[in-house]
Length: 182
Image (cartoon, rainbow, N blue to C red):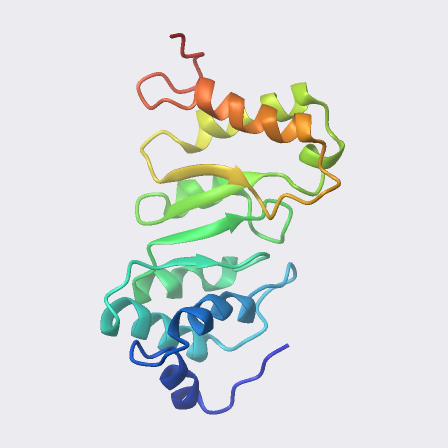
């Protein structure tokens, strides 16, 4: 776990002029990654996001595996554009609730369960979950369907193919949840 006492030193590491800017900015999400909740202060998060969004001029999609539910209102206030991934089994990360509460201001990426459905479910289970997410989360925009975490070797290839094939077949905004032909 990383610990920062001097936030100004951390901000200088992610400054655009720093030669390691991109690598350090990617590591920022690791400060938040824990399925039980936050592992850093909201002050560090606030200063970091403010710098990335306003000083460096980036759109910001936070990559953080785990539960960031408690921080979402602050992240929105700081200018966050999206969350990646949505780890649906982490505390407070129910994708339907998140979409209802924050879907008008955030884009969500992820939500197909890598802890149960993808590794242990059947292709039909995967298809059902993908169609469910498309029907419930995609309306109104702001949803990028993907796995809730990295695809690990223990996930059957057939389930991965089913996830993407189903998304391709059913995930068209003009006919959400309806199979697209031709």
